Length: 66
Image 1 (cartoon, one colour):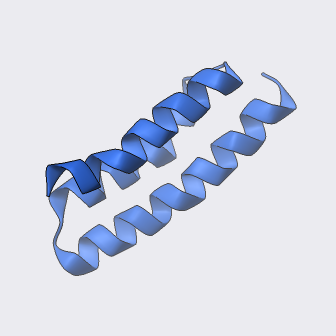
Image 2 (cartoon, one colour):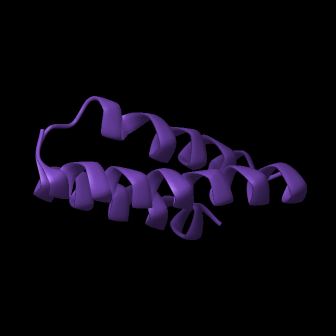
């Protein structure tokens, strides 16, 4: 696992924590689930590009589900 993958994982995990808190306060199931997914998925992905692509998709889901 490279440095870029670790840094992107930290960025998306921090964003995921924010999504989870926002979803909990607004009672938005989509935001809460995407927040949990954003925190957990970097543990299983070893490519930096794949980490970024999955993170951007997970960040967009709550806006598309509305």
